[in-house]
Length: 253
Image 1 (tube, helix red, strand yellow):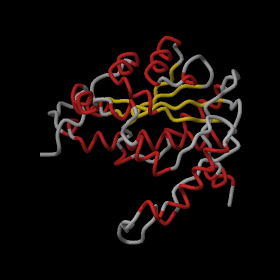
Image 2 (cartoon, helix red, strand yellow):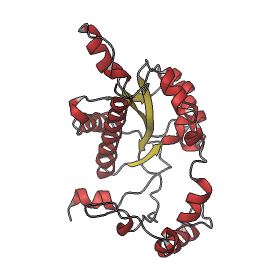
Image 3 (cartoon, helix red, strand yellow):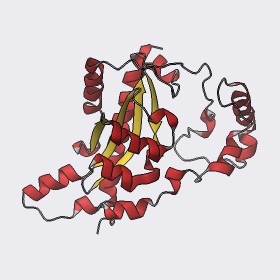
């Protein structure tokens, strides 16, 4: 056990922040942490947009429908899968288009953005800040892309809100047991997931029933049965948007 491991194990999503701004020194440190994150094939295929314009933030607020995205509390970052930069480098060198239209390279850019964001989350939480990922802003991909001025061959992966916590949740949301997350050598499907998850379901039910805010009656398996694929961002027409942005158009020939 060390401070890094302790920070990771104590992760909690924070959705309410004070009006105290995050210092510019801390923000630049977080950007440097993102820059130093591992990257697929050294392509560095991500871009971070720091949203400071209240009008743009309101677009993201409306897209997400989450109340804590609105207003001015916390730093709002948007992590973008960026194939545009490398496509322009190739174009300036006189190379014919090709790889920038492959779905695999868009996938690598998504991975780079996600890795950079998680590095920022760990660094921010180690400094006593709170964080919340915002996949919900993808409910309205075209509007968000227009507000952020995204060029072709880019796409938002998610947003991230960082700030001084108004209140850190006392409870920590339970996670799936390790025996259903980790296998040795080959994937080991369970014969009856409901039976294997029965104890976990009781743990999740107790968590929802006793947490301080937004308590409810629910279990993990019920959550999957009722909500899997039902969210606004999950139902947004992703392929249509990506094709319009000249991303993930085809597999490698």
